[in-house]
Each structure stands twice: as C-alpha cells, then as structure tokens.
Image (tube, rainbow, N blue to C red; front, side):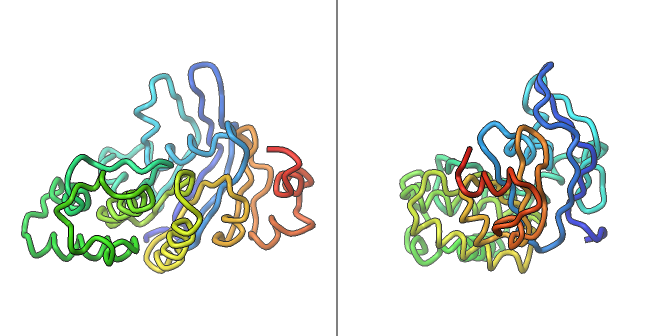
Length: 253
C-alpha cells in the first residue's frame, strides 16, 4: 500500500435525510490488523462500513461529509468506484448466495473483470475456497447450487466470493449472526490466516469475538466513538471510559 495506513477517517458525518447517525468521528486502521467495531444496535456500525467502499451511495437520502481515505486516496473523489469496491471487499450479516453453482459464485466477479481462461479461473476458485476453509467440503461438487449449501457453508462461500476480488481490505458485518458456534470459530481461524494478506475490519455485537480476534477495538455508541485502543485495554477491567466497561460487562446494550 502507498499509505502507512490502510484506512484514515477524519470528521466523518453521515445523515439519512435530516437524521444524522454518525457524528464527526475520526480513526485509522493499520495495514494487516484486525480492527473491530463494537456497540449496540443503531450505533452506526453498518453505516460506517458502507462509507468505506461507498456502498452508502446506494442509500437514497444519505449524505456524507468529512474524509475517508483508503490506501491514501479520498474515496469520495475517486471516479472508479468499482475499483474501490474490489479493493474493499464486504461480507454481509446473512449469506447471500447467487443462484448459480458453487464454482460460478466464486468465478462471477473475476469473469466480469475480464478473466476468461479456465485454468486461471480454476486456480482462483480453488484458492478462494481454500482461504475460506470450504474447499475440502465442496471440491467434489463445484457444479452444485451454492444456495443448497448449509448456512455456515454459504457464509464461507460469501467470504470466498469476496476474496475473489483479491481485496486489500475485507469488511465483515456481523458474519456470525446466523451460523452456529463451531462454524463461527472456523471462520475466526480463517480471518487469523487472512490477516497476513489483507487488513480486516470487523463489525460485531459479540464482545468475546472482538476480544479473541482484534488487535484494536473501537466502541461506537450513538454514532460517536466512545473509546478506541488496543483490545487488551478496551476489554480490561480498566478501559479509558466507564461506558466501555459497562457495555462490555453487559450493563447495557
């Protein structure tokens, strides 16, 4: 990356119509770290992710101000938004399988970007499915419908599809909300491996998940940053802000 930071956010504000939901927040994400965002529902966590790769553009009435830089570039000034979204991959809370084969789910975006040689596609599909810890389970039925997989398998297929863009930053929004604990732990192991190749921004309501995975954690509450620091501090008995301790301990949220 050309910047010393993967993501730089300065005085970010986001409003839906007249209702402001993110109130001038600033933070940065370092290359190859797992950066967690925690906080109660309606705190602006998902909206924040959408600002990183400009999928917020699809929301009618949304207005954004401030600066979001990815790899040193102001995302709001970029003309090639598709390149930005390839660089910043997104995994939604619920798996969204395309109504096509497992193979084609992963190969869809590379094909759309001009990759046509079957050998190249074969290598990419296998690599992405391996990275998502799904290859061994599906390698003998790549022609089967992706939507016929179990919920946990579909979520890993969604991750494989996001990886097919070869992103520099992978954003995950509550990836474990609809899957079992065993599959959740498998995906967590995948993320620990992927951090060697990319930066990971993780939105989660599971405090213990952020504690297990994240190098640094940001506590977002009502669209404001309450605390941001090393996870060892945020989840300690003495974080910088009392509200952080109360949220982590389940006093509210």
